[in-house]
Length: 95
Image (cartoon, rainbow, N blue to C red):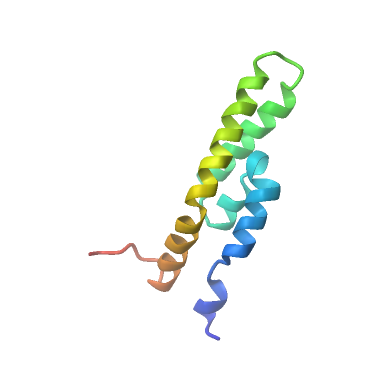
């Protein structure tokens, strides 16, 4: 097993992170080196938690739930894209 093969991301790990920590923490995105959107999800989740006693927090929870469901359809492609990036040595595809 090469150093590159050890760096490849697992779909199983990504799915577990998505299911348990994805909605409020964006852990699956951080695992896939998408720090910006992972931190955005974490900030929105923290905002929803802090404002959970206010009426408009319902809409924040709805936004997070919709985002979480959309991520389910995109997750395998995100893992494949990250693994392709790793296998290319960190270079974008130059087709």
